[in-house]
Length: 44
Image 1 (cartoon, helix red, strand yellow):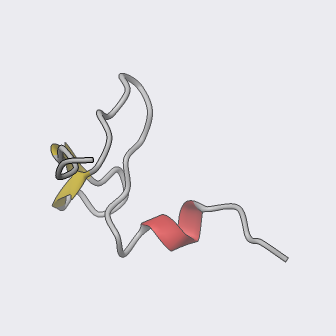
Image 2 (cartoon, helix red, strand yellow):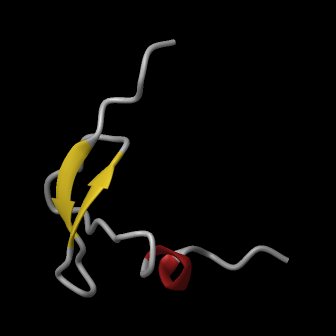
Image 3 (tube, helix red, strand yellow):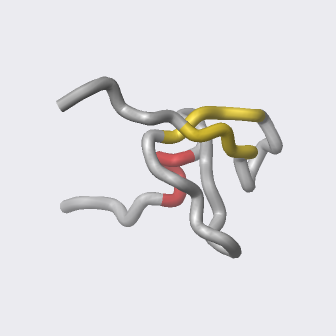
């Protein structure tokens, strides 16, 4: 596999511009590395 294609996105939480390894879907919030853990479902 080649290098991952990164897509520019704006974090829905802090508004910071970040890059994600997937194409952000319309209407779905995207979070930066700092905010993402707060939105993931906790694993037990």
